[in-house]
Structures are given as structure tokens and as C-alpha cells.
Length: 618
Image (cartoon, rainbow, N blue to C red; front, side, top):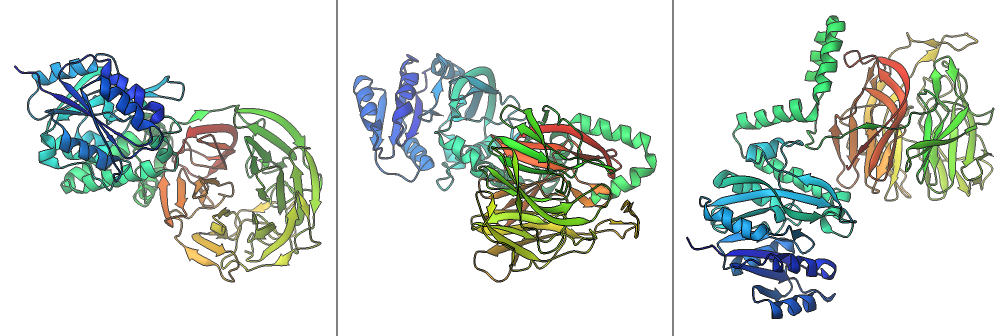
């Protein structure tokens, strides 16, 4: 049987750093019956000189250099020029394992027509070390749409080859897609071809900072496009297959076996709670079935159990301020977590006049942490107006002018050189406040003697979060009301018969110079006690856990995209919890807090000192 011709197509634009290793990867295969088409997009960095040099010495290399419309267009141009019956795509920054191409030709001699043959691929870091082996051994359309760790798809085209005739069946690569064109092609091909998986490592995929894939994953474009493409093909399936895939995703991918084991045990302990659990699940509105699972790992625990603490981040240091150890015991300490080393490095005292819980807090991200009002004392002590600044370099405290009125759990941000405080509750902890004040500050000091009035927020209340995104002031969710102390009680014991709070998910934004707040997309799961949110890439606001109502904690991560004014919900926390969140080096941390009594009984339960971290991309 005549050996079929194999064509390797390499799209490149300004790829001087890696193009030589790509060319040598094919040259050193020493394989007759191949051609290497290099489609250059008009590089200006010396890439063309390298291609010319090797093309003059090796006749199997053919190349063109002209402007095109991106990677997909370059690949399609190569397909139109190919002379081979079999196609492989090798991006300029990737390379083959030795001896792969002769092996491919041998496999295709006995493969039915048309075939799609796939092997394994090394995923490499900046040091050329393997950080992951991609093994798509369960490759099929259904499994790829289901997703999960066992249902991997080929991460990189260096690990697969196919008959050129497949393009006659499904068309070329989508030139409007610059990130997931290979996944889109794969989902079109799988239903109409013979698929063969070979448990051998063929490709090497550089996942490093200078590459398009790395950058698109960091800014979330890759994940968004992947979900978009998979949703398109999911909707093309019959309705019963769509529901089957969604069910499998939920049961076996989004929830690990220990999730069910824990819930079975909880049900056996509290059988009277089972009807409530079923009702809650039917009403949970889980709006996003993510295909990637967050893998949580424990870090060094907080030196003391605490909840309702205030946190602020300066670089890789996270300052955890005050909080309750229990309802009758408040903390007057600051503990510092090194997010880089994952260790607790220091502890120091708060000023004796400073509130310990429900503090409005923000930082300049460089040195100073601003602490505004809050509750001083245990149980349901009243709010106070006092304000302080922490100099994180000197570990010293500075007084600021107090707020015009006492406030409990306001939200606070630095914006245009002014410290803004708004919302919260009044002195009784229960009456919602809509007031908005600001004061000019610089280098941890007030530049004015008092606070001035600003545009009040349309809806007041405590336990809400806020963020400054692209010069706009966003405020998310909140509640009207909170537990009051027993009237006349000198110890201010909490009166748990206080009417339940009204929890709302309203999102408001105030633009610079505007006189009115605008209403934006509401939180899909109205939640409070989310003060310590995380802002990623000046675009995504991440809310971790919190209270859905007084007696119901949440296990959700809610993500707001300011660019599209949309929300997503990810049920990925290992517990139902109200906690404090931080983000550093691609890792999402939640630090201490209060868990639910069980996975069945979602009432607030044990206060803990656990610290959890997971790799996270919004």
C-alpha cells in the first residue's frame, strides 16, 4: 500500500522565539512522505528569515508570508494548499515528540477512511517542565459536552491527525473564532469520523505567559468562548440527550462523591429535614453548570477561630482584623496571612477605642487600610462612628474624623482621592441607612476636618459589598434590617425574635460626576455578608458564600462581569459558609468564618479557623 502523504500546517505571526524549534521538530523526525506548510501572517520580527533559511535546506518545507485574518484563516489557507491526504496542525510555539510522524503514517495505513487519530500531549510551563499530561482517552462528542476531568478533549492539535477529506464533510475552521476554533472543529468532526485513541505521547504544548492561549485564559476569553461553543453544539442535540448531559454534569462532575456521602449521612441524622432539602434544591436556580471543577486545598489555619472579621489585602499580605470568636467574645487582634507563602506571619493589637466587628473597610492597595465605623463589643452592641487607618508598614494606627452618624456594617471605597462610606444600619443595627458621605484622604491622613454629603444610595442596609471598576462605583446586594438587642438590656444580648431581614440582590452603579445611582443586573442569588468580595482583572467581582437569609448559609460563588452586566453562579464551595475572600496569584482563598450546622441544616453553626484555596479563573 502506498504511504499517504502527511501535511503539517503551521500558522505563525511574529514567532521568532519558537519558530526554529517548531521547524526542527519536524525536520528531526527524518520521515519521508511529509510536507511542512508554514503560513506566515506577515511577520516583522525576523520570523521570515528563519523560515527562509530552513526552507532553502529542506525541500519538504513550503511557505508563504502575507497578511491574513488570524490563526484560523492561516490554517484554512494551508488546507487549500496541502498536497497530503493526512493533516496535522502544529502551532509555531509547540513541537512533536521524536519519532511521532513515522508512527502516524504507519497508523493511517490501517485506519478506515475518514479517521481522526489522537494521542497524549504534554502541557509545559516556562521552564519546559511538564505540568500536566493531557490524555483524551474517552474522546467522543457526548463525553466532551459532559466535561469533567475524565472526559478530556485534546488540548492542543499537536496530539492529533486526521484525513483531509473530513473538511469536505464539516467545512473549514471558523475564521471568526480566534480562541476555540480547534474545539469547534472537533465537535463537528467527531460525529462523522472513525475515532482512534492511542495511548502514546505525541505533542508538546507550551502553556507560558507570552502565548495567546495563556493570555486568553488569564483574561477569561478562552473559558467564555469554550462555554459558548459547547452550548451551541449541546443545543443541536435531541432534547433528551441535552437533559441527559446536564444531569450527568450535575451529578458526577459538579459534585464529588464525598458531597453525596456527606449528605446521605446528614439525612440519616436529620430525616425530618429531607422534605426541606428537596424543596430547596428545586428552588435553587443553579444558573451555571461549569465544566471545570475547583479543587480546594487547605492552607495554614488562622491562629484563632473568627467570624464577621474585616479583611484588606496589600500585595501578598492579607490583614484579618477583629471579628467574633463567639457571640460573647470579640477579638481585638489583627492577624496577617502571607498569601504567597501561605503562612501566618504576625499579630498585633487594634486600638482599644476601635470597633471589632462589622467595620467598613478598604485599602489603597499599597500601604494604608481604612476602617470606618462598625460595632464595638460582643453580642448586639450598638454601632459607633469612629474611624481609623492602619499603616501596614509601621503597624501603627491613625485616627480619622468620625462619621457624622453611627453606622453598622457600611460599605467603603476609595474613589477619586476620597474615602466614601455609604449604606449600613443606624445605631440600633436594624434601621437601614441610605446616607453616603466622603472625605478627602492621602497617605493615610484626612485632608479635611469632616465628611461631606454625597449622592445617597437608593436602597440602604448593611452587609453588602462594593467595588470600583473602571472609574465606576458599584454596590451589590444587601439587607434591610438585622438582629436588634433586647430593649433596655445593658449587655445588649441579641434578640433573635427580631423580624427577619429582607435580603435583596439589587446592584447599583454611580458614575463619576453623576447625581443618580443606576440600577444594574441583580444578583441571581440575593445574598448578604459578602463584604469581603474579590475584584479580578478590573472586571469580575467574585462573591463567596454568605447568608441567603438569617438561617440559611450559601455554598455559592457568584461572579459579576462588569463589561457585560451579567452574573454567573458556581456551586463550588466545600461548605455552606459566610467567610472572607482574597485573591492572589490565580488562587481564590476564603479565610475562617462560620459554617452551616450541616449540609442539610443550613443554619449558621460552628465558627472555624480554616483557610481554603483553589485555582480560580472567572
